[in-house]
Image 1: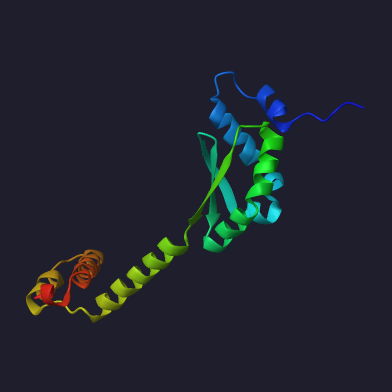
Image 2: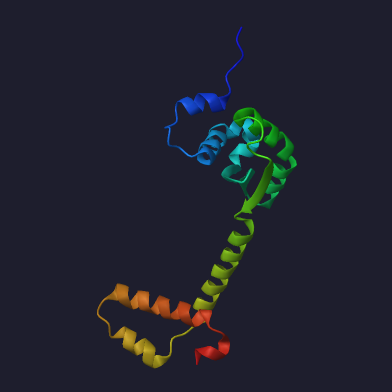
Amino acid sequence: MSEPERLSEIISRRTPAGAKKGKLSLESIKMGWGHIAGERLAEKSEPTRIIRGTLTVAAEGSAWAAEVSIASKTILRNVETVLGGGAVKKLKVKAKGDRVQGIREEREGTVMRREAEVKLSGELRDEIGRLDDEEIREALTGLLKASMANRGPDENS
């Protein structure tokens, strides 16, 4: 019985000759990510790049990034099985979403609360009220309220 072929050998036969080695390695890892990281981690993470022997993996939030980090030795061992020895020496894990999404939601919520509190001055409200198109009136009113909401309290006068 013959030995099973490496995934990298199978993929290299199906890849155009001009493909870059790093891109080929990353594509090989992406194709086998479920096997390399395990199905559970693969659903919440993805390999994003390989630079100078370091594989970067993006995970959905800090909790999943920690899980990927804990499994890093196994992941590196499995990458070696797929690509052969020496292609990837380190694993770098980045959390995506958690902090940035939380800040964005907080900021948007604050702006929406401020918009509700902002009242247009009489003259400005009257000028907008003279416009014929209702959609334009609503858009301008919303834009002005958002603009005023983003200013500090002393800047609105």
